Length: 409
Image (cartoon, rainbow, N blue to C red):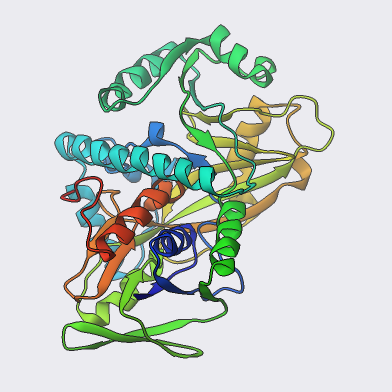
């Protein structure tokens, strides 16, 4: 079967790979000159089932309200005249009950854990270098009160089978000595099966494997519209002509609603902006060695060999990816305080990108009402974590097989 995959981020490329494994002919279309040039370019780099919590939680509405007047909130809301912002926000708020947050978190963790198992299968079959680190991820807290709340909060993931251990300050320092000279840390939670790695490097290496095995990867090709005839997709109109196939996969992240709307699909995906710093280690003596999240500030720190990636902030502010140095000041200060001799902070590279979020934080996955169009989009803040599993599920569905995990959620 000839399958057209729309989107060259980690979700699209992993989908192309899984389809190739099943013997399909694959065409992948990406508007940028290279794959992994947008959301997959500068993410936190964490494969983190241990951080599968749904953002739409009972705490979220108050945090969003505070963000209108207080700086440095981890989750921010920036009002605009965009009607899609308001309709999406109402759907998001509807998911912020304790019952729905728990249900969504369990479903999210199930996808994430399955996805990590698929990643391991891929790595057993392919030689890919991407600064992988399998030392786990440390979620640390600065006060005994926040540690106690965090440990209680983590129980929902423990009930889902997530491995974890609660550490006191000495345990945190033993795991990550670079934190010894920073501010007081009460303790943390270590998820030893979580891991990290550079999503951009992985995605581009996997794309080259796909290309070598016969996939047609069309970069610098903008998708203009999906053409439907009857109840089937007839083709995809692009800046370089029409591309046709037997089946189609929509994996365009934040751009998915724009293409889906004219063919009668209303996808509740809206961009949530994230900020990232990539900092060279240079000659500094105490860089981070383990991926970590400062849970009191929601700043993530990921070592990538001779670089460190620092990420923070979720800003609901439309499709704008512009940024200025002030946007990164808080996260840089947090990082510098934690790892005073950890990196060359004056050489930090700034980046901002858009996470394709759904109100429930769960991806939109499976067949659509257009018979030969399959959806694999809306992965939010852990697209790198969930991409391998949703790619395998998409390939299974296209091949007429049952998905490995239930898709009701």
